[in-house]
Image 1 (cartoon, helix red, strand yellow):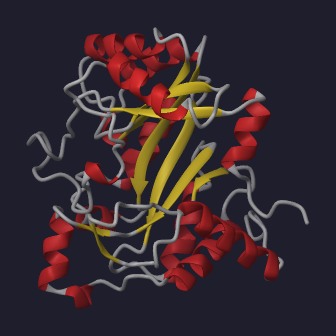
Image 2 (cartoon, one colour):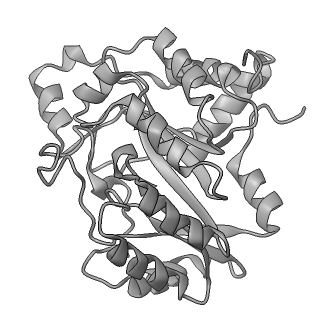
Length: 306
């Protein structure tokens, strides 16, 4: 049976002809909803410890983190290239001078062939886009924007401190620059319905994205959301694995067929995860569940895209 969705692994093979691994780096950024520019406390769901590997630390140089990342991955995969993944917090939220110094340092590593830059929609300006475009002339460069939701009421609930229109504006600034554009979405935000999840697919399909990361809402220790959950867990309708897989399947049917799905779920350390517990399922196992669900129902990505 032909592939029922566009997988990131297939995209990497076709683009590079070999394995390419992201190495996360923490460059010591903050966010405008943390430092008081727009708000305090950050996003209610966010704890960067859930995805920062052990070798990442803002106390180390970019090169140190890349070297340790290579040492971590190289015994597993002997011959491969790497992308420096600026992942922690908002990685375009600084002066052009400092951004250039950090990106230059990453690309000076002999095994790094490109950049992946994770950021917020309100931290993209034309000057920043111009800078990133220069790197894209000679390297693979991807910018990932945290959309999280297309509904402003949900963005307010999450303390994102930006609107969905700002997301649209950010992609308008970045498009047509040879920059590979990606997005993140959360499935399961309190107050959102199955219809809302499907509408997310309709709306993000209008954006000039190549990649999309999906992940389930998780309650993580040390977050504002964890406190809210403790005070009133009934306000959270956390999804079961089966419900999530069905929602993702319907989402994919409405999604633009050429969008590459980079991830279907998030896998937080069990010592930090409060809920939902999915029996320790790994990301690749969730991916397989989605694939089998799609195949069983004769669904495919873009089937209902208009």
